[in-house]
Amino acid sequence: MLLTIVLAIGYYTDTLNEFTHPSGDMAWKLLLLIVFVSSLARIFPDFRILRALTAERRALGVGMFYLGMAHSVSHLPVLFFYPLNALPNYVLYGGVALSIAFLLYATSNIWSMKILKKYWKWLHRLVYLIVILTILHIFFLEKEVEELVSGGFLILAFVVCKVLVAKKIQVRLPGKFVPDL
Image (cartoon, rainbow, N blue to C red; front, side, top):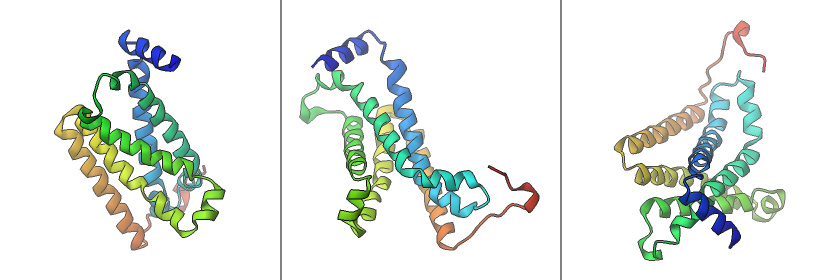
């Protein structure tokens, strides 16, 4: 209750805008990194930083969830003014994306991997659905076709990366140009 009051005061005095957009933006960027880094590490094997980031996807996912949650919580005061059957589309898509992100967050541990076994990987592939829902969240929030087009290009880029990985295509750098990271 106290948190809601603080957030409402912050929202209506326009002091949360400094926090709301950057937290959502950073969560989006972490989500894209999580989705692309594994494929990019296979396509560009000489970039060791990509392999290091691939190993840290779980931590990146936790950070993405926390930032998404912070973004969502900062909007709670506004949601109290909408009846449940009249929530804006961007709230619905963002809420479903965050709910799936919570499910992935809650199962991002060794114990869940042991219990779920082969289903754990299937469950965590829902991250791709989060990307689509987030693209729709941004589109309905901004109401600009450019957002939908750029989201389409992101999905196309992801598909191209997956095809390159499936065909085992690698881009190698000449020996003297390999970055030592």
